Amino acid sequence: MNIAILGYGIVGGGVHALLTDGALGIRVKRVLDVRSIEGLDDLLTDNIADILGDPDIHCIVETIGGMHPALSYVTSALRSGKHVVTSNKELVSHGMAPLMEGAAMHGVQIRFGASVGGGIPWIAGIARQRRADRIQAISGIANGTTNFILDAMAHGAQFADALAQAQRLGYAEADASADLDGLDAQRKCAVSAAMAFDAVLETRDIPPLGISSIQRADMDAFASRGLVCKLMMHAARQDASLSAYVEPTLIGIDSLAAHVPTNHNYLCMDTVRAGRLGYFGQGAGRFPTAETVVQDLLDISAGVTYQARKAVPLPVQNDAVKHAYYVRTAVPGQFVAIRAEAWGAGILTQTVSVERMHDLARQARIEDPGVFIAGVQG
Image 1 (spheres, rainbow, N blue to C red):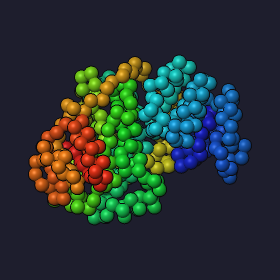
Image 2 (tube, rainbow, N blue to C red; image 1 turned 120 degrees about the horizontal axis):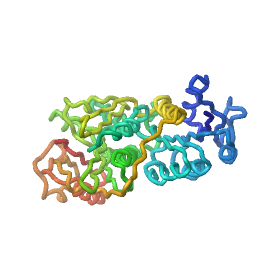
Image 3 (cartoon, one colour; image 1 turned 30 degrees about the vertical axis):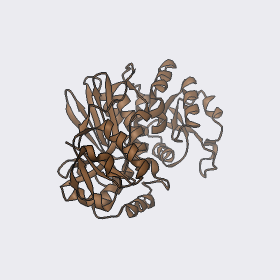
Image 4 (cartoon, helix red, strand yellow; image 1 turned 120 degrees about the vertical axis):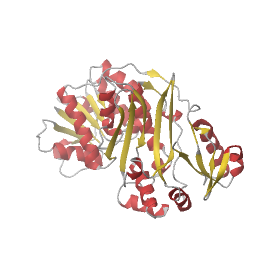
């Protein structure tokens, strides 16, 4: 099978490196990039038409990232009868249903295993499990940057120092706001939930709480109570709707998720027949992510397809999910009605719905940008 790689960055370059020896029967025929890249010689082009118009290219690997021009390139490739493998979580989270419909219409596949979980076979696991089982809920640590920071803080580091170290190691961008504010995990939650529940849902309907305002005092309060803080995504079936949200979550020190180290991910699905299934591994990085891309390519080459399912629009409603929260804020008056007790630098609330707490969080942030809120896992 001949492929073209769109975007020769960390992941795209990793895919090329894994395929260079030709042992897997997949040949990189073209690379699209606007830069001059030493060693690519005749492979390199900056014109997508050179790829779309080549009948000998059977699949494109999109590792550009973002929405534009990635969306245009991917949709054009599908219309041209070419398979697509992408690691682009933003692209997939905003357009999974139309992209999959477009692939089916033109008799090709779109694969996005590397969009969630890096090297973890999470999306492939969902696709496999749902063939003969029913997935009731998904949850877990889906962002390696925030897990690295929270793990470092659990071992005594200050937030700023942990973030700087993550940036030095390449786990965090110079502008890490998408990670710290929960937007990266929000997109991964949308992709995972759409796949697990055959749902059409809007990413913007999944409310995120992040960790950008967490402080040393918060971590000390959690540790004194035998708790660890992890940024987690949560989604579950709720009759004719879904619950879906992202928030810092306090979990017991004895739980598996509490011991997920550095930049790793830990993703779980709760199913009717198999019970709880967990996936652990490198959530990012050049070769872990590239390996998942290559696995998708091998499936396409072997004719392995995702089972066709009709996706239906499902609203996100978080009013039925309830638990206590830790809140530290300079404007505690907004939380008086649900306050339960003082808890170190903050307060512990009574049991409250996720929907109400995320609404209160948005209101509190207007007066106190430094407010920090974490759900307490029951």
